[in-house]
Image (tube, rainbow, N blue to C red; front, top):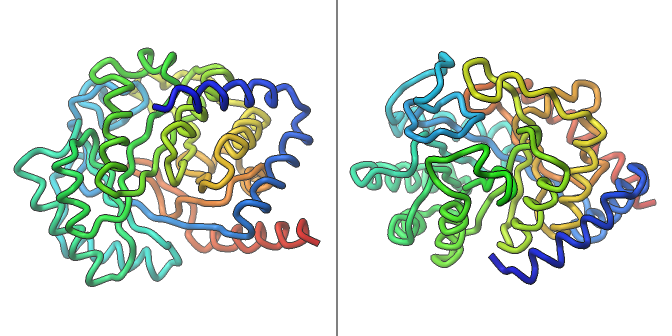
Length: 314
């Protein structure tokens, strides 16, 4: 990470964090509209290999350390993945991402992942992303050569809080994967989860870390406590704090996509409000082990938000 960017961004966000929520949101929305206009991007993910993950991430239903009843299955066939990618494109997604459980791609799986990426890219004509865990430059170069556009690898939380969430691999192993992906010419999508038990300062630390890594897209998940995981009893984050977090991430990453992802449905009737706090992207069509909203509902939400943004310009 760029230590200078991390510290300066963190200091700026700590100052902004004390603003009244309305002022903070207004400032963040102004930055969004000035730097990114009315741009609103959609993406869809597919869980192509599920369960039996060796890692101990406290929130994850797919960890072998937890008993959650999450589905377990091997790598899906190319035909199944192509059908899902075609459906995502028809629904309006601008990107399609394959996601696989596990610490990282096994040597025997790499060729299969490359074939999937190439098939989706060539036959569906949609930019392909992948979230396959910790990977080195050789694996990432192979995926890029196959047509991969973007690699997804969340930091999850701040460097300080991370050891309370995962002990089977470290925060800086995640950083190394992000740096390796950028080094071979891939864009990077990386964000985290709000509501793991972290403080506001931890959320600021995550935003500063992402700014220092210059990632292209930042998914913000809101924890869905899953029975059987270590975080099943964590109380929910108040909506005000979620909105404050979105706004601070926009200020930290003024030119990047801030993407509302898993758990946003918990905001119920307030789902449009994060897009008035600087968010401008969304994951649609469901998540890994948790259902999302109907796609048509989300598409209507996009049009409503764009209308509000347009009014803000006038």
